[in-house]
Length: 347
Image 1: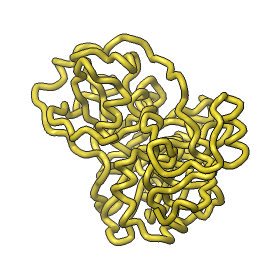
Image 2: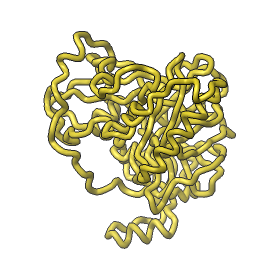
Image 3: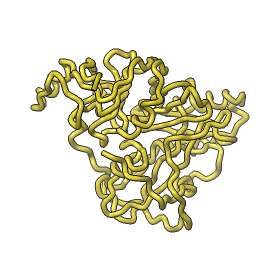
Image 4: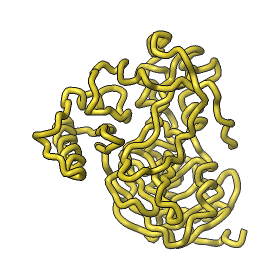
């Protein structure tokens, strides 16, 4: 409580979007022909980095129960809202239906950035943490970012302070917005369940911006804040104590990513409004990936038709450009069916 009077003028604490559009009520097609065995869930937040490895994790799946929703499954498996919705087109967000096979997009291509400190890719709605004391590990979590009119700033920063149970001093612009919406804010929001900063806050050298928890976890993985970066309460608690002051933070916007794992080159793409720019960016990042291994593009067989799979309805799922088979069902065939669920996240 010693930091209750800290003047945290965080821009990233707007309320969660009031209404979320449904993507339809159709379940995925039967999957009994895809898998005959199932395995325990592999946590999707910490991975070993071996040499030049640039893609980590594996796609997994889970069978929905009656009470499941996509937002609840997202938090249970440490995914963001946009990630799980994008990976499951045609599935009703609030009523997937008992027996529906839900894809967990727990495979990631790392951002093209130095592997030090925190790297946040706003296009992916995801944070990657490279601990200074372990160069062979990356820790990743979904994040909520700023809305279009309050976009999260790109660039470099550092963590200047760590605060437990912060008070929030909303700036005049946010108080005015809340007042216009009929929800007046006090000058100071004290620590507690009504504080949008949650229980942990990492103060950035970017004036007014924080990485923090939230009292509205359903907004993680979406564009819902006034610019700050928010994590699930359990995620920021996991890295908070060991996060050194002075940790570098890089915020990038990379909607198309290409990275190597072994001899396979993976392409991962998120939504980009301009299709022509998407095609151009895809070729640029693939060419750059080839150059990282000193491979001439005209001497390496890239299946550009398969690259088109990344811009389809299952955006965000990495596609191996160096393997045969273009059918999306074939791409998902190796996905592990999860039988052992992780412990439910605390509120």
